[in-house]
Image (cartoon, rainbow, N blue to C red; front, side, top):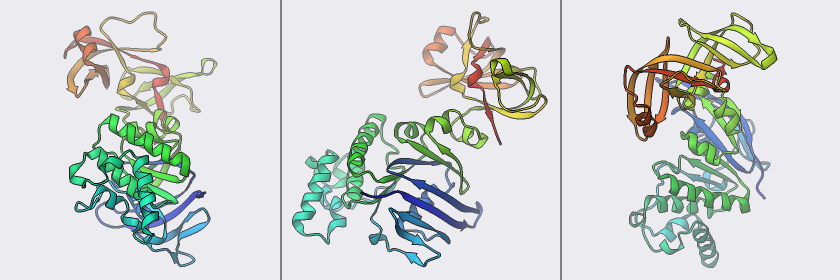
Length: 365
C-alpha cells in the first residue's frame, strides 16, 4: 500500500511578483486541498512533486522512497516517480481514441496486461462505452474522466490534480468526485488537489492548506480554516466581503462576548470573546450571506446586533442580490430575488441589518 507524502521545498521566483516558495508538509491517503490566490505557489508545488520543476533545496518522499533530495543529490526522472498528474488543460491526444489515450502510459506492458488495466479503469470511471471515440467526439465531463483514467491506470503512488474540474457544471463535478472517491477507497494514495473554489474545498477536502506568496498560512479542516478563519488574508480569499477595523470597548466574560466599535463610526458590535484588552485594535470579518435585512425594527430576536441603515445600491449578481447599506460604515449583504421582492427593497429605503454574534469573526493580520 502506498505511504504518506512528505514535502519540503524551497525555490525563488524573480520578476514583477518575485517571491520565495518555502513550504513543508505531510499528506496521508485521501484529499489534501491546496487553496490560494493565483501565483501563490500551488501549481509549482505539484510540478516539483511530479519532477517537472527542480527545487533549489528540499525533498519529496513518498512511503520512504525519495523522489527528490537535493542534499543527497537524488532527483528521479519523471517516468520513475509513479506520480499521476491531471492538468487544468487536459492535454489529451486528439488523434488517439479514448482507449489509446488511457493506455498511453502503459506501452511497456504486455498487450494482455495493458488491455486488462485499461478496461478496468474505463469501467471505474464509467467511460467504457466511449473507448473507440476521440476526445473531440465526447463532452467536457467525459474528457475529464478520460484524463483521470489516464493518470490512474499507471497505479500512481501520488495523484496531483490542478483544477481538473473547472468549467464543469455542479452535477457533473459531483459525479466525477464520487467516482474518484470510490477509486481512492481501494487504492488509498495521497491526492493533492488545487482549486480556487470554496465549494470544492468543502465537497472534497478532509484537509486544506492555504498558501500566500509561497508560504503556508493555514492548515486544518475546511470548516476550521474557511468557515471561521483567523487570518484576514484567508478571510479575503474565501469571500468575507466585509472586513473592518475596530476597537474593543468592553469585555463580557460571564457571557463569552465583547463589544467592539467599528473605526470612524458609531457602529458597535457584540462579537465572540477573544484574548484582548479594552482599547485594543483588531479586525472584524463578516460574510455578506450572514447578514439579514429587515424593513421594520426587528423585535424578539436571539441575534445581538441590530443596526439601522439605508440602502445605497442593489444589484443582481447571478441568482443573488447584492445590497450595499450605509450605516455609519458601508456593509454588503446578500439576499435572494424573492427576498428583494417580498421586502420591496430599493436604493434609499431604510433598513435594519441583523447579525449574530458568531457571524462576527475576529481576524489577525
